[in-house]
Figure 1 (tube, one colour):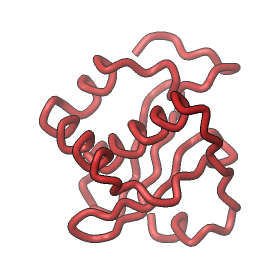
Figure 2 (cartoon, rainbow, N blue to C red; figure 1 turned 120 degrees about the vertical axis):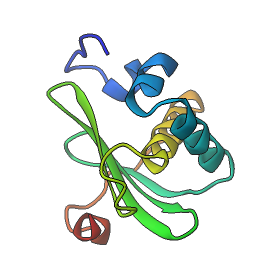
Figure 3 (cartoon, one colour; figure 1 turned 180 degrees about the vertical axis):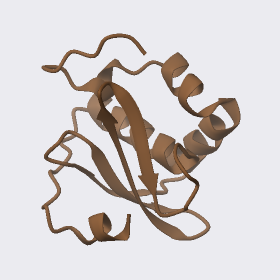
Figure 4 (cartoon, rainbow, N blue to C red; figure 1 turned 30 degrees about the vertical axis):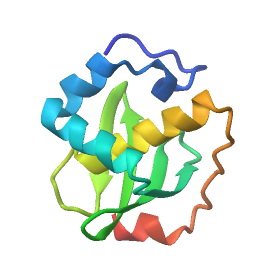
Length: 117
């Protein structure tokens, strides 16, 4: 994925190729479709710079994406075992917020979504 600079938002640095390499074309397409349908709810940033949201898909899932040593990681209530289309949907929604200069609120440390992951 290349070197990520700590003073930059690492999500802003992601490319379509990075996301494809992370989850593959099929999950990328599914995540893009979820994001376009408005499945990402209550998008928030964590104090560590990660992203947390509800995903309203076939069920409602809490999903968190973030970086650890420049590696993109996902935890999701879907029990997919790592990167999933729900994580992609959150990243794409966040990028959409950035392009529109929309603020993303910071999540409180006791947010119930943390306890569901």
